[in-house]
Amino acid sequence: MVFIHVLRAYLARQTSQHPGWLAGLADARLAPSLRAIHAQPARRWTVDALAELAGLSRSAFAERFRATVGSSPIDYLANWRMRLAAARLRRGNEPLSRIAQSFGYNSDSAFAATFRRVVGQSPARYRSLHRDQADA
Image 1 (tube, rainbow, N blue to C red):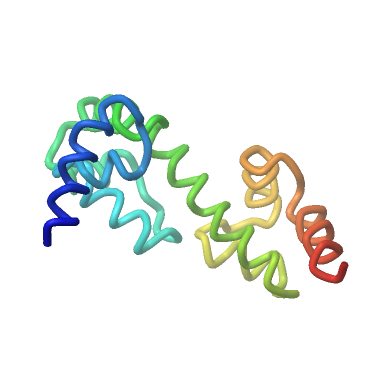
Image 2: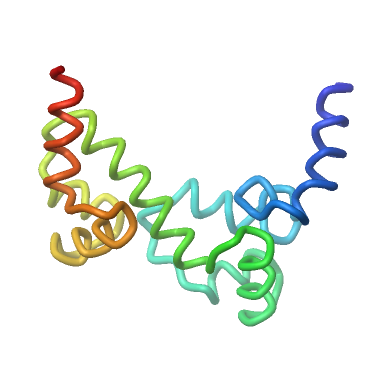
């Protein structure tokens, strides 16, 4: 119990200086939106829907999210999806189309473009490089 109180006190002091998802989770208004993104990454989230979960206007939510988390809500969502997708690409041979659909992308090309923007390489190259590392 003492550890939890110490951690909360630390986060309360540090989150204003160090934006990130922990800072967002420590913010009572933003936490429901972050939990929703993490729980349902495939949902077609909009800033309006996330703002509603936070009980804020769209503009107030977007500004607060960026200041607290360090990125826009939609960029955070894309980064979270691509982090999950990267883990699935490393784990096996699941078809790219299935991974794309599971994260709410209707086309492989839209998914691949987002993956390339976020990760810095195509999903196929990422899988190939990580498969080679696992085999080594």
